[in-house]
Amino acid sequence: MAAVPCQNPEAPGSLGLTREECEREAWAIEPDGRHHRGAAAVVAGLAWALGVRPLLGLSYLPGLKQIEDIVYAWVAANRSELPQAKPHCLEHPGECGGKDEEN
Image (tube, rainbow, N blue to C red; front, side, top):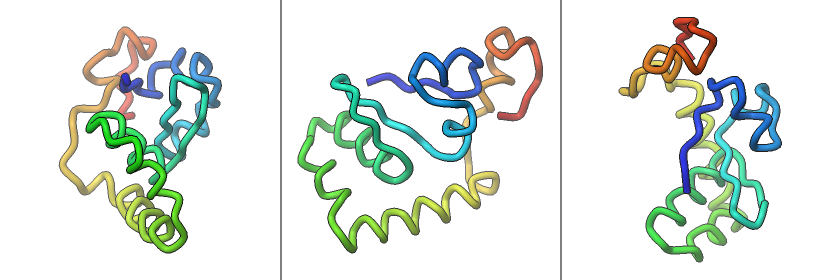
């Protein structure tokens, strides 16, 4: 598994996504090509990192999925207020056309 920042202009297309899709929510793409978005992408990342694949199946259970989606939406809406790493384009301006973007 690899984290790919969508702020890199080449990243969305290389993953079969649009920039708008990447900006809207997190994505996880499995080696077999299955895509997960939003809360399911976060769970997929955890499942792969922890080596607990059944965790991903739980993410799609009714009830639990709705709770995950609510939490994900809250985090996404408030992410500017949460502790975070330096924006990718500020750390790697050469990958973003040399712009000091805050994305």
